[in-house]
Image (tube, rainbow, N blue to C red; front, side):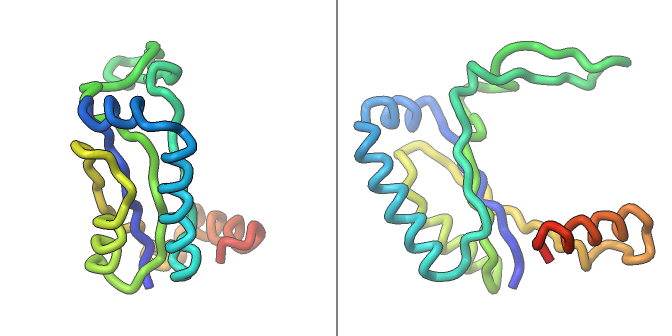
Length: 139
């Protein structure tokens, strides 16, 4: 099994469709999909993000970080939320991504999440992270 992140990206088209959809209808659709992930035993985590205009951007281009209001980059492809799933293969992750309850124009990026066992086990920072993961029940 390997973890994959399904990164949901909205576009102007999908955001317009989402804004015209009743909230209860969206909850019903997303809830049914989430239940499928839970029943399949593959869901690790999932979160949606708030309105991008409420966020800030910390820019590291200069010598000191600069904080500005609003979304970063093009507003036509914003990161809107994610699912973290634990599946047998990239192909299975893609199959789940294809079933996402997404509005027309949306995109979903599928990325593997490397496990802590893939990093040098004698590195002091990896040792500390492993201990933290064990304490918090993540391992």
